[in-house]
Amino acid sequence: MTENNPNESNYIPKGKIRINTPPPPIQTAPQASTKYKGVKHTIMVMSGKGGVGKSTFSVNIAVTLARKYRVGLIDADINGPDDPKLLGVSKEKLYTSEGGIIPIDTPYGVRVVSMAFLLPDEKTAVIWRGSLRHKAVQQFLEDTIWDDVDYGILDFPPGTGDEALTVSQLIPQTEGVVIVVTPQELALLDAKKAINFAEQMHIKVIGIVENMSGFACPHCGTITDIFKSGGAESLARELNIPFLGKIPIFPEIVQNGDTGIPAVTVSKEIEKIYNNIAEAMIEQIETRNKQNPS
Image (tube, rainbow, N blue to C red):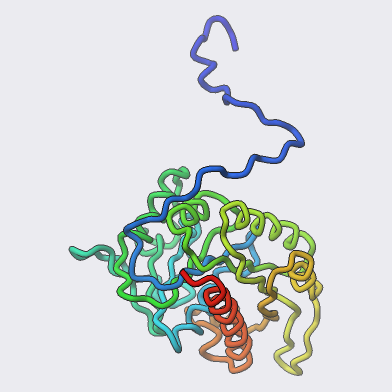
């Protein structure tokens, strides 16, 4: 800073970064929203890092659950909203009524809200600071007409930033979080941060899913471990967290996702895998609720 420019100090960040000192735990107890209504069970889907297939998982697990239940999907990734594309409804637009935001109906029984519906086109970037992203997620939660949904799936951006913090503070009564990881060590390391976030926010971890767990050859069905395999299961044992299942890389998942068709609707093998994961999720939730009735 120079004496000739006293305002230069405004550009210097205030506060101290303490090297090798972990951040203090969040002390303030979250206050539940009184406006978030119409959803019986809320499930958060998180990952420690990007590129693990979290949105693909969120969409396919939502479609799987929708075969037996009323399901809502909140695309909480404000900067990179992909769920409408994966559900084939990316050209739809959100509208409001006197009661609030009307979620978009999809051909698969899932009702969805997303920032993608509010953008003029797919190439438009959302260049927002955290406060605006917080407000957008809050509106998706509190101002949407969910109309008695059994399961609400929240698809978060990677990491433990504003969107996840917003939800954990507004709806601490969430059923818990599902952590999606890939088998390699880097993804597992970052997954531990997401699990630690849940612990600090007093949110239960429903379980861990290992995505991209080997490549399924479309010709012979042989599974080749491209990114290793079994890392998530080992992590679950280490942290005493339920392991919900493995999802190999199927070409159908990529091909159909690009055309807006969830893979569980076209492949019996993929459908079976997601059915098993959905059953494991529900079993964890129901068991916990029986043990701790509200």
